[in-house]
Image (cartoon, rainbow, N blue to C red; front, top):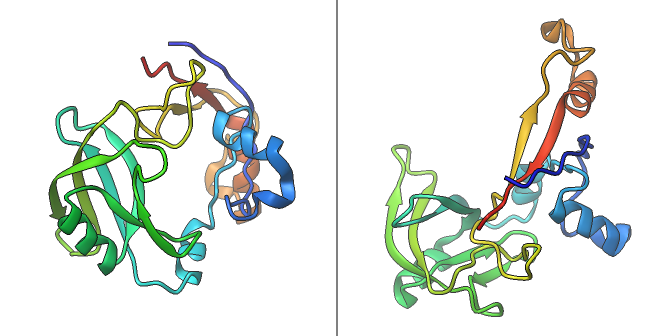
Length: 187
């Protein structure tokens, strides 16, 4: 594994939509892991889009690797079945997201499953090409999965002795000081 470690920066308010204010460099940092920007408010933003959606785990039908976690509404589910490909709902753009429409990284739909409480879906897919993520690896090719980084807890970090005593504001500092990011080789 090729390892690149950086300290974690937890930013509760950062989203892809708000990146225009921060510029291209911040967008690069978000996706390439020089800073770990975890969006703890994602579900609030999903609710604010006011489109009824459910989470969708998109998994490779052969390797069982999780490729993407996204959202679908009724239209996206119908279009997935109709087109026999992975179709999702973009909660940030509030529109249908036909996976691979612009990149060519189409995900053929093999099967759709529903969980026990019928509040999330699992799309089993087969990529037509090699990629599923919109980001590209160091070699310029599309990454096969959006999960190309591992978050590691560092042992013996100062300030983590009494985790039960931490208030909400202190948790982000614990994470910031106790976590490192490892970039995985996806070859």
